[in-house]
Figure 1 (cartoon, rainbow, N blue to C red):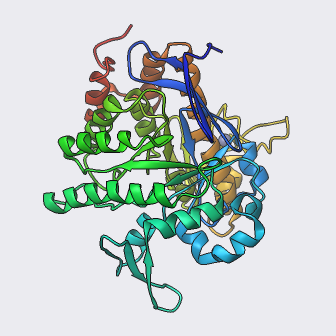
Figure 2: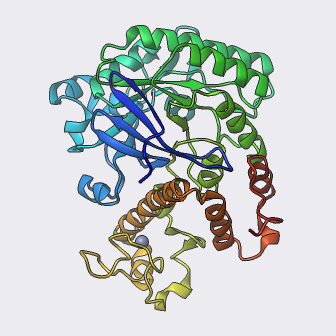
Figure 3: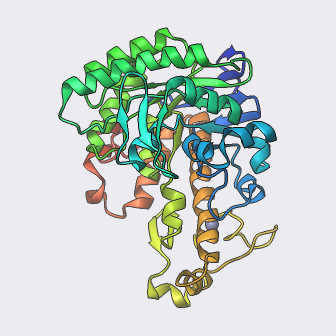
Length: 411
Ligand SMILES: [Zn+2]
């Protein structure tokens, strides 16, 4: 492995930059958190109710996952703050020795509860249990996350869909997110053992994103997230926002793009200089019978798999596909047979999909360290799209912007 280029430490986080791609903005780094080191770039699976649907903590560990995401909103409702405090936090609750990142709870509320209403004070909503009015403030979100004991906590932010045409409201949300970060910092009780990340907002307006970057960087949080994306905007717009932000962000801090999980989005976003990602898609799609593979998504419910005795993906090292060495040697036919009625298929595909995502990021990291990332990107797209004519325009454009031309340059 390459030697560390540069490091930065705060009380509960150490960031070591290990390698930089000499063509794109991709970086490989090691992030040391209170529950151990994690290698970046990385994908974080989402364990909604302190468990990844269909996976035990041991199985999640076996995929190589060392940092998973929990939802503050769900944990706050059940088991609730009192129980979490009594048991000593979410690591103990779920028997997870490794790192946890929690969201602020705000996004879940706004997206799950139709009656959520945002004011300067916080997010007002009606309890889904008994309909009583409740209020999530920056202080309350941080108090919950302090009790959860997550290694990385996210600030409460004012999130608006990027496609909103209301520029004034977008600006209000961006400025309010900065003010709420200040309240989160003031409320944070455990900066010695928990890291609070800021979230850059500003929709698709690049000038507003730049302004927000400046404000957030000045607050010097141990890590920085780019938020509000994956809300239905065009992928080219998404790439412009990420590239605009990474250009301004300090090199020696982790950069987390929230809500991103399609493999081609990960590969392109890493080239644009992002390090961390999360998304429910790989686990959710498993429950619909979909396997993520390097040749694209396969729906194992398709009748043709009934007599396909190959693994879910040829060459995959996950516990389902692997033969020997503790692997189960599961066939597509077996998964297909169970998809109609049994949850076992969802479990198997969840294991495979999580492993696929984490392994993709391991390969990405190895390629960056070997300074072969442009070649890796070419091979990745060649596997996914047999015809170059099918390469998505947004990816071609974004990659060209960081010096990789997938169509012209064959070297
Ligand atoms: Zn597999």
